[in-house]
Length: 393
Image 1 (cartoon, rainbow, N blue to C red):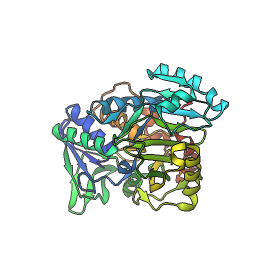
Image 2 (image 1 turned 180 degrees about the vertical axis):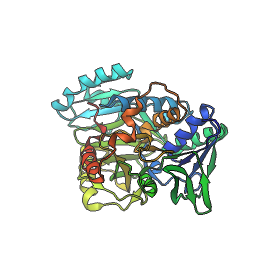
Image 3 (image 1 turned 90 degrees about the horizontal axis):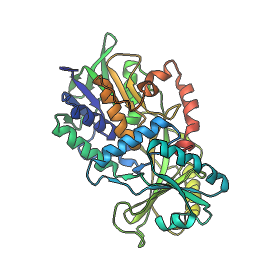
Image 4 (image 1 turned 60 degrees about the vertical axis):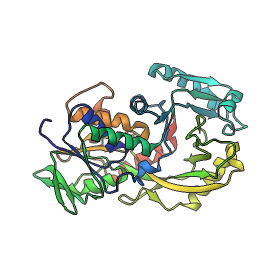
């Protein structure tokens, strides 16, 4: 890679992670370009609730999350290891926890089954009175996605990366089957390698050189309550709480509760628009109402703010990390959550530099695994994963 310039499009948490890992390994000819002003992250990163759950039914997703936590933990004060409670409201829900404990042990994660009363002590107000028990994953936690991104940007910049703000990329530049740069309003920026790390904007840019990014954007509701006298101003004061049987999750944000739900018909989104969309009352409000009935602290708390954020699904729930198969010089770091962004950035940087840590088999995340798929096939295979996004077994 000596003497070869890498341009990363997107300065959200994924793009910042790529730049951090490249420069940390001594490669400094990195330019990160973003349409926004520095410190402004209204995209998917800025909308993310910041939950970092490491236990997953997919071993590689778990490894990416564990590696991300290791990175975030090296950024002082940015990862809050408060744990996560998976609450079961039936004996059937409880029955899967034994496998989760075993899976956690194999991954080096501390997971144990606890009683409802023990869970309620850890997360007062967030454990349903219909709970049968819970799985406590002690190593999980939460981050402030904007703060983590800023820390990664600062690290990359200190190690030699450059950043260009307020510079929308209008299209990719191609010559003889190779991407050779990006076009801005001010002209073309040349590059030997272009990395797309722009989330739901990725397919629009990739299409300018005839590349289809195999992912489906979907809309998702999240809500914040008014301040509660029961909470302190600390960013998060108790474990994240999830209800896998109900597709509901919740956490504290300082003096407010935050909660989201997947218990509604999935809503595919259009590519290329903002990551924040108009809130869909008819689809989302009934699901949020059900979630509030489930969680005691939410039953009487007024909702202060509702958001509709967009994230991307793939046909196998795994991110898209690696070279685009259709053209040379274009790499993707797409369809990644904050949960996995640290590991995704590391994996992509290592591939670009010809290194290998053995973190994940690159072939499992390679965009080429869906080569030849139509957009319709990608959407049909991706959409069923919406509700099951947090399943651990």
